[in-house]
Length: 145
Image (cartoon, rainbow, N blue to C red; front, side, top):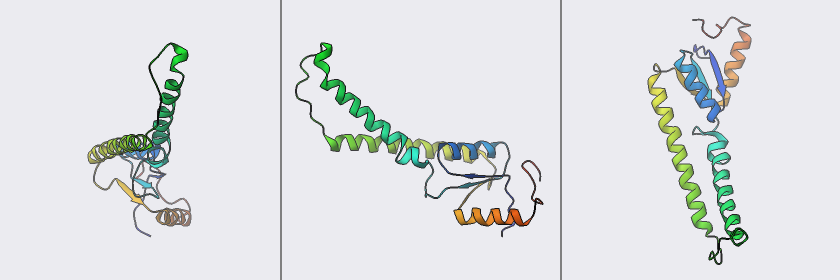
C-alpha cells in the first residue's frame, strides 16, 4: 500500500462529489476522489437531470402548442416534431454543461496545492480501506498531520 494518507475519501464524482472535493481541498485536506467513469459530472450531468429536463421542456412546449387554441392563440397550425433537432439541442446543452464543469473544476483545482486531489479507482479505495482497518485506528484523522 502506498504511504499516502488521506483526510477524506469521496465516492462519486457527480455534482456533490466533485464540489465537495474541491471545497475540502481549499480547506487544506488531502482528498481522494473516487469515480468509476472517466469524467466528472455523474449521472445528473451525463444521462440524468440535465438531459431529462431538456427533453421534458421540449415536451412541455409541444403540449402548450397543441392546446394553444384553447387559450385563444390561433394560427399555430399543424405541429410536427423534428426528433433530430430535439436531440441535437439536448446534446448541445449537455456539451455546454460538461464544459462548464470542466472549466470550474480546472479553475478550482488550480488554486489548490499540487497533489491535493487525486483520482482513485474503486480497487484503490478497497485497498485504502483495508489498509486503514489493518492500522486499527493509527491513521491520522482529518486535520492531523
